[in-house]
Image (cartoon, rainbow, N blue to C red; front, side, top):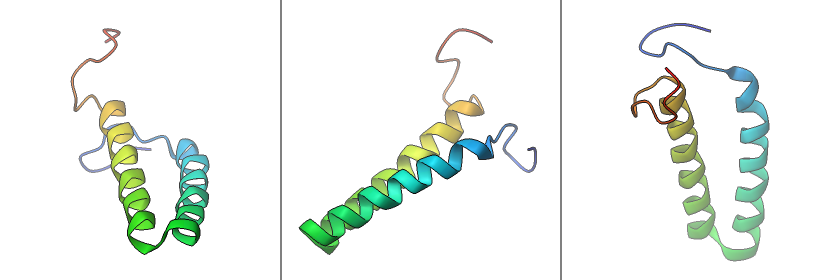
Length: 66
């Protein structure tokens, strides 16, 4: 998929990552509380942002393949 600022976006990777993040977020929220659940949620969002940035080369050539 192409559009806007992003050159590459692999949507198939999003579904399993989002599902896993939601399950972890819910379990932490139920067991530890709201603040800890929020920390997991924000961490998941930042991790996905890093994935998209790496896919688009915004963090440089990390693997030396391009």
